[in-house]
Every structure is written in C-alpha cells, then in structure tokens.
Image: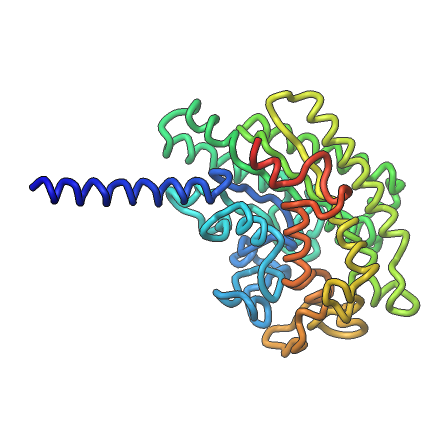
Length: 363
C-alpha cells in the first residue's frame, strides 16, 4: 500500500509540475483583439458582406484551411498569440463559447472602421463601437464564469488588449470621395483628430470594463498597397504619398494618445506598435527579408493584382513567401510573421513605444 501511495504521490508531483510549466509558458491569461480584416479570423463569415475570406485560396497555407483570415496563412495576432505562449489561436467572437472565452476573444471585422459608416459599401461589418459592445457582453459572461465582478476585474487586468483600426477609415472612407463626404468636410489633420476622438471614447469604454494592458497598432503604409499602386501610382511602384502622409498624421496622434492615457491612468499601461515603420523597413530592403515582389498581390485581378481581392478558387502564385502582399490589401503570412515578431519583441527602438508586447506581458 505504501508503494502505491508513493507512486501516486510522484504522479501528482509530475502533474503539478506539468501544470506549472503550462502556466509559465502562457504569459498572460487572455488576449482580446479588436480590428479589421488584417486580423479578422472569421467574424465576417456569417455576415451579408463582400468583405469575406472564408474560401480558397485564402487559408491555403493555414492548417485549418480557409477560416475567414485575409491571408494565405497566419495573421499578425496569430503570431503574437504563439509568442505569448497560447496553445491555440484566439477564437472569433462569432464562435467563442463557454470557458473558451477565458483565453480571450477576437472581435475584429473586415471593412470595419473607427467611424460607424466606414466600409458600408461592402455590406455588413462590425465597427469599433460594435466590437466594444460585443466585448461588454463577453465581460458579463466572464463575471458569471468566475463568480463575481472583483475576481473578473482582477483576471481581466492581467490580459492583453490589442487594437488595430483606422486603415478602413482612409481606404474605405476618406479616400473614396465618390461614396463618402469626409474628404470634403475635413482636412487630413482634422480627420485624424475626429478619428482619435472616437478612438479615445472606445478606449475609455474598454478601460471601464476591465482592460489595463493596451496595445495600439498604428496604420501601415496604405499608399504602398497593390490596390493603391494599381489605382494611383503612375509606374505601379511609387507609393501614393498623399495617402501615406495622412496615415502618418493619424499615427502621430495615436502616439500622443498613448502618452495621454499613460499619464492619466497609473493602473494601466498603453503601448504603440509602429506598423508603418516596420513595413517601411521591409520595403527599403526587401531582399534581406526574403521578398522579391513588394508591389503586387500573390493573387488578385488587374494591374498589380490590385483591383480586387482573390477570387474564389483562383490559383495564387507558387512562391508565396517571396511576395510581401497576399492580395490587393493584405500582407501574406511571411510578412505577418515578421510584423508579429517585431511587435512582440522590438528589433529596432522605433518598433514599439514606450515598450514592446513582451515587456507589457510581464507587467
């Protein structure tokens, strides 16, 4: 009998050790994601929308095939989730159920913007305010699962909140004057300010509902996407400066927002990820990162494969890792891995401000 007790004691120690390793491996209890098609992983699949990617060749290099990710494989937040030690990718809000939500939820929606009307020409989508509303529903479920509000608040305070919106407010709003009046109402400076004011409101909502570790992801170089190169670049290679200039104005205000919130909330930490700078770094020396084509999509239609996104069952390029862009708008998995890794652990001092995600996770 004593031998059996000793044996079970060893087994218990081993199990406890394995559990301890698991906890140590996962750096934060949960990861909540807000954004657009760059990080949507299925929330638009059931919507009456043109902004969907639940068909091949999307997901051609992803283990589960097409999921709604606008990539051939992983997105940046998938890479970050791996680096944070999660065993699985964060589930979309549309399918997340039960205790699964305790690991975090992805609320991102393709075509979504900071402004309510952004992307409306593409059909249904979940705007930033809609995503925050969905998060509030999740919080009430977390309270039920954990037993009370104090326990839930303590739990949520340790989680990471990633927010990456604004691209569509330029791509599918401001720089679409035939469909939207914003470019006639506002200068680029005024428009960025209007966006930041709404962004501020939603961040305050997230803070009021338990968020304490914020990752604000800047807008990339939209003027260098195959879509903009196809439409507005004389040679199909030179980036569209008036668009990139507007994007930089927004990003600078977003950095200011990080300082503003950090100064006002001693119990929270806000950081900025310089997606624009990381992207610029890649395009300045693409060969160093293994890229051969930086101005055209791996699949798509028309000049630069940039007129529209990949057609259903279209055959994409074979050398996918050599293409910076997967389609007219979205980077491929290879680029997403680089951006995700540099967001998690800054390669350059300009990649993240004031700290990177790996250090935020440790706070």
